[in-house]
Length: 436
Picture 1 (cartoon, rainbow, N blue to C red):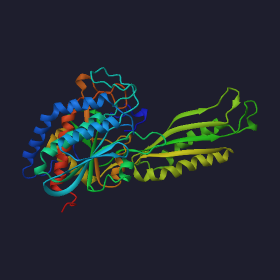
Picture 2: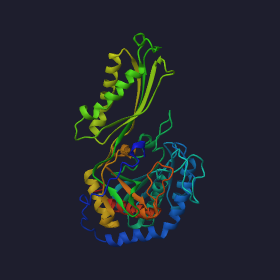
Picture 3: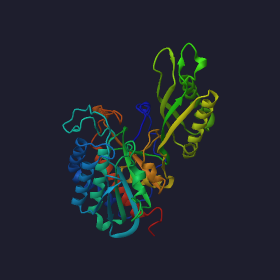
Picture 4: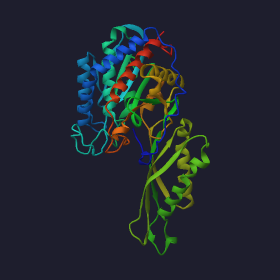
């Protein structure tokens, strides 16, 4: 997950009830199946905790997940899967064909870590200096593996097909490299077989372990990054008329960009434009020849996301032209809006309410962090969930992307139960009608 630092406590969000949920009608034999899923998940919980701790101790950065990928593949093969490796560098894919007819569903787990030095004193802390699973992808990976094992044991009663996708480089490929969800899609991860729907989850410490949260529509923001170089002309500070002041021009641009949300976008839609760095000048009495701005643009509205690059550059070009400056702009797309298909979200909420209990399924407010799961949703209907990992009693409430992030491992059982039951329900009920 990508997030800007200003978000760290912004999400005092949540829990507006379960209005989107509704328990829905029970499917014949459903209670027995949920009990079977939960029983298997409970049986394998100790080994899942062990797996999570192994991944936590051996974190690897984006496009460098060699050991992580090998361990995922090893565990899947032990379960009886045929495994495809090397997808988008270090991605892993496994397919489970049920004994009964039905549609194809996919579950996505991301596997990379962050360049953060861990500050949590636990026996299984990171052994890779400066690298940490501070975004919880170790839990995401473990949940995917757990769901894969649960459903493999129930294969003879499973409808349809489930594709498990373990994705590298969600946090962003290194400069000059491709990676992540977009690269997996380009390499055919949604083909042979082609899923009718895709699901995934992300840990969040604003909900307690044992809870999940979701909403129809925009859940997480689209995100872009930019690097803007303003080129002026240097002169002595006593004679500004002889130069072109890059600092003055860049300052106007910073101010003008703030008018995009307030004057160019419908107030009922969201847009955040944040300049994170402003670097210019070499000496106190010299007019700066160059200024460099970097920052991020985020929105929960897909239409706004499509329009914003043109609007952004129009502001920059106009101000530069008015001041005789020139510019170079590197404007990069990071991820689209995580946009939960409304009908599929209602189905997922109903399924989760039955498997976890309606009191543990929250309808949440959207957040302006981003996630490249959104690229999958641009291809097929998808639903992304939040998995609560807080333990307020123990004080484990630090946010993701921080060196003190510590999730409650009891959430693993909740995640595995939720994932397996949701995939089971989708393939059995076939809400899209694709498997008929």
